[in-house]
Length: 275
Length: 190
Image 1 (cartoon, one colour):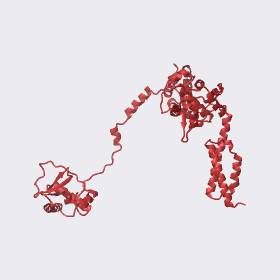
Image 2 (cartoon, one colour):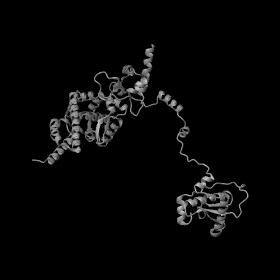
Image 3 (cartoon, helix red, strand yellow):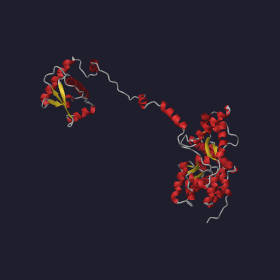
Image 4 (cartoon, chains in turn orange, blue):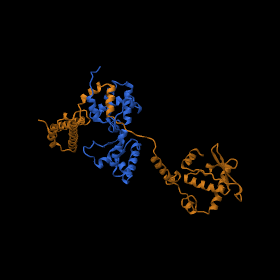
């Protein structure tokens, strides 16, 4: 006497086998009527009361699903055989292997009615194309619809700069004067020929402090307390301090020199001691 | 010319433009497109055009999405069907050369289509190639099958099975082909 566990195992194997057979029919590697539907249903019925687990019930449902496909194929098979189009495939194959080429061509030409088509442009499509062209918006205008995201730039007030700790809450001219004195002192101590490397002057312990010093330096240069000397080939920027600030900055055309003070640049300077 | 006649003359002209000139990747026009272009009485316009084309040995061929309805097709079935202009009669072997077919290639196509029909619409490509290589040069067989697929006579699935495709359904009278094949005299293989 088989235990319930063993019976379930055999049942599952049988259902798997049925599914495989059904799939063979579905993939047309087996004739649909080689599968006896009545026998299969008997097997499914026999084991159904034993299924309690969801996996077993799913297997049962899958078997039914595949069996339904086979029954559909059986119905198609009967329909095909009953139509006048059905011919014994073996007989047809035999004919195909024995028929002469000329005879095959003659036969085929009697049943072949090739499609007539023209690929040239027609007046209608030309007119449509012109209409389309007329309504087509120029690229310049179409691209306007998708503007590139822009970063809005605004003028920062002194209060805002103080809030962001870029400026200290002192009179700005006093601050600038002190900063100029510091530059002159550093040039004397570390500089050569009245100039010092830009990064050696602006570089500080923290990135924030470095940005603040670069900001102040930009005012020193703009107001004529100092000037920048750029050596592109050596990729070095020097800052030269004037002993006295010029009365006017006019006369010479002023240019703007953007200098990035990124965190990476600052770290590189920290590691190497200079930019 | 009566108003009615003028109406249909203009519709037939429009239908001719729509059907003769290729509008999409594949030739032919869907029924719903004809309805959009010609109005709801497009089946009548097509029937007039078909009648006119008889004198030119051409016809309007209707290929239904599923099997050809046994009775008069419904408007819905017509809307889903595809309409083509095809030859009404037959080509002579000499004429096939004019439309770009070598006699060998055409015979290969005929054998392939007939074989796939004999296998109920699905046959492994390997089997078809074996059959073709009995009478065609080996290197040409694969190229020919690829060409039949490219033209839309056949389609192939990922398992290497060949099926009849849209062009065969539009151009080949499958029943006539099988009937004619079975009627041909058999000769013992040499």
